[in-house]
View 1 (cartoon, rainbow, N blue to C red):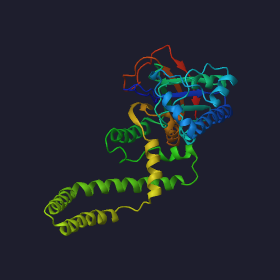
View 2 (view 1 turned 135 degrees about the vertical axis):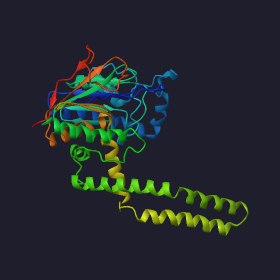
View 3 (view 1 turned 30 degrees about the vertical axis):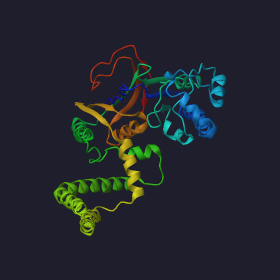
View 4 (view 1 turned 90 degrees about the vertical axis):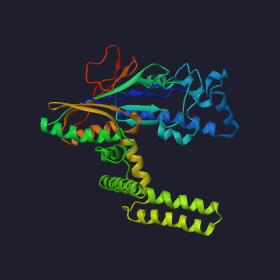
Length: 361
């Protein structure tokens, strides 16, 4: 299977970016994560100080013509790693955001502002820092002119199994393009959880939570559709009663409206607010948008997503559990505009490519 990940070009003056660093081993990647996390955390802590908050306004956006001096931690890193830092980093404003800005995927490190804040910077100086820490950096940034493609290849045990996987994933992908994107189960949801190693919820329980959440969504939508006319009538009559001074009648009508919805909600599958928030986060981060095609036992899957959503390894593990072999990926950087929906043909030359990462048997 081949999976393609890219970021669309921004329509404003900000510049979202993703940097993927490849290291020789997972241990080196973790060492780099620890160092970059320290930079981001201390940077956020500096901006959290009341006396430093105003500095953000002078660096966002840089077109204002004000050159904000580097923060102490940026000066330390620029001198330690001999990097021409340039502009002060403008997207790390809170220390807690460090958790959402960087992840490790085996021997790969992904740093992005997509889940953090807008930026007017692009990939620099993070790309240079990755290289100073011993990695190879590829970048996805409209400001820097490149975008990333993560290519996963895999072979199903047989054409029949390939067809089954293709049909199931196609059904999910066709729904993920609609506004009801969360109404079908994410095929690789459990493997997303396993990749994040979250101990609070076991995989089977996460699947049960997903089933409960999706059931509530379906039933809630069906209720609102079937009761739409009644609910609108009650609210209209309540508003008219208010205008005519019949406030007690208006209150009674609004209570009837509330009672109708309360009784409907009582019939929904039980799900605590905490569980609902957790499983919704899982569904949103593991979801994918793209296309899948089958050629005999080979599957080609063009996936558009944020690589920091952890779904890359989740998809790979899902394929492995379903009997696929030779499951591997590489990340490529391209320089032409990504006006394509599927990378089923030969990709253009002249790109930066990481080495293949193969999922263990």
